[in-house]
Length: 130
Image (tube, rainbow, N blue to C red; front, side, top):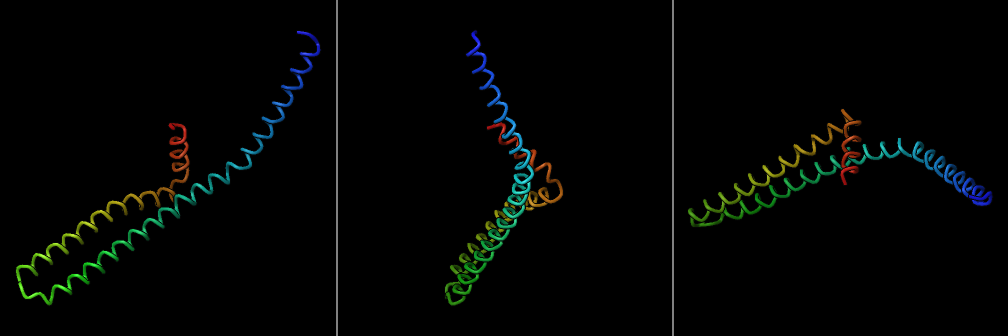
């Protein structure tokens, strides 16, 4: 290796070292902001999902109540009873599905408030596994 190649290699390695230092500074500055945004996203995302689920449950109750009161004018008691059973079953199904999602979202919400480092580690683990 001649002197010109050595000087080129040294210049190249010094450039790499400078860029690595800049990248390190960037990561050190941005990591706390990323963690804060990640925790906020987890928290507010869980609250948003709870509000949406509550809205869906209320909408289901409004629709089934409307349909239930429409059955009051039915003359045939057997048909009226079947309609009421279907509406009650629909309410139960929606409540069970919403409850399952709500439990998961409440768990995520509490985890982001009580154990924020666990949320960060879970997110990093998910990224590494990809």
